[in-house]
Image 1 (cartoon, rainbow, N blue to C red):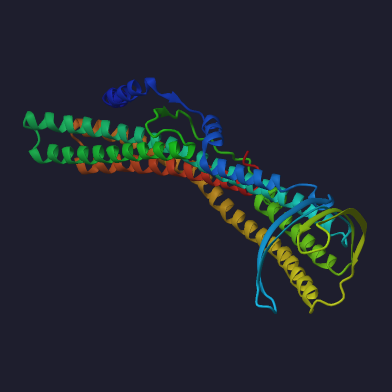
Image 2 (cartoon, helix red, strand yellow):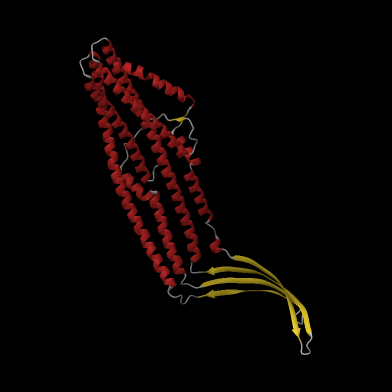
Length: 434
């Protein structure tokens, strides 16, 4: 226990200064990071505006009549020159003007149910857009969560390296003391200094990686890069995750699958729209027109007429060069392809889930395995430090014990992080990330 106490005292100052710097920092939870990103991330804002465009496209326009107003005014001036039989020249100027105005009303009463299919297509496009927006949100949540836990993992690795540096400092001080009293050659304390510098360099590199990880998190949250935030949390894995549950949930709730199902419905509606062109169309039409003209060329100086008309317009398609049949065939092929794409996507997702789940289980087992290795390595290191202090263990042998502890601890931290990322990815595929 004396050795452990020395390590704690040695690394106390690094921890103290880090804590002092973070006193004015804001401690962020995962929920706060996600909440900030939902409000400020550019991908979410753009996706939300795209969804708003789709919402604006859902209207009753296919069922409503059209009303238009047209008006035209013209004015003309003609200069005439005539040479009569007597040789006299005659010149005259003729002015004329006209006004044509009208109001047109058109209401399609029947078009082979095209209007109903168009309206339903608008709703399906809206639903597809909502799943696209949800997919954007899910991917952002996955990125935020992965980065959040990556920072925690890097923080733990920094703490581990601080502990290793503390051990190397103790070893260096002991070697230097023995050298000063003449019990050891200068080779041992010089080698201990090299190891201390190597561990310190590794610690500095990991601290730099931690800073960059925070910058990436700020980027995802769209907050100033100069922000001062810290994350204090632990990584807990969900060991109750079931492969059958993930697969069954993915087949129903996966955003990509749901979007493709909407795409299949849209393709079916496109087929109905194409077939509707084979049916006759019936329109209710009405109009009111006003015409006024004035000219010096006619016996009457001006002419004025106004009135209205209404009626029914029936159009029956007979032959359009096989264009309608071509459109129907292409729409039918698109519908078949959309159905096949759903099955292919489900197959790909199931394959991906099974592979990820195997990796997930492997990392869970690795966590337990490396924890045993870490505890054993720590006990060996503790005993080795005492032997080294007494001079019964060489510096190279001590370094082996030190690296063994470092490697086992590092492998455990990496396994925990990888297991958490795989867990989040599986929940994303299952449509159960949030």
